[in-house]
Image (cartoon, rainbow over all chains, first blue to last red; front, top):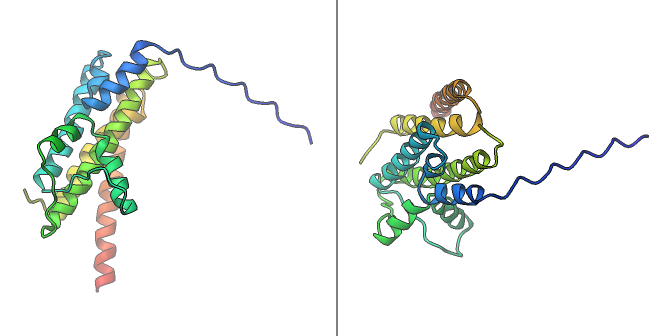
Length: 136
Length: 58
């Protein structure tokens, strides 16, 4: 049986200052990776979505995970939370987000905070794709 | 702050759909359509899950 021709390797995307800076800024400040590339509407919508979700999670008394080596779900919770970048750093600095285990909605809050972090990571990756020209 | 289960799921769906729409499609029109589609799927999933739990309980 004849072998299928090997797929041509894609050339590596050019390493520019923007391709490094945009995802880093986008992670630190939700939506900023798009804003510095003049994608104003997209940037503002992403900023609003991630920030409001994170703040709602805090207002619902959700738990903010700290670095840990305990239960696997706690470790994954931290990974999700830290995706929120600057929001996570500020909340940890203010020592907010201990979680209220007596409230049913606090569990929703915990999930809101984790998902806000994960959505922010997707936004930062999108900012990188714009920076390397893969996306308009 | 206290949200009902349904309203919490709706708010979650709305913001997640905005981010999915913007990041997973290339043109504004496609972004809008995909965002709406995601929201509809979230909503349908929530309602289906709710009814499934109701059926399991009864």
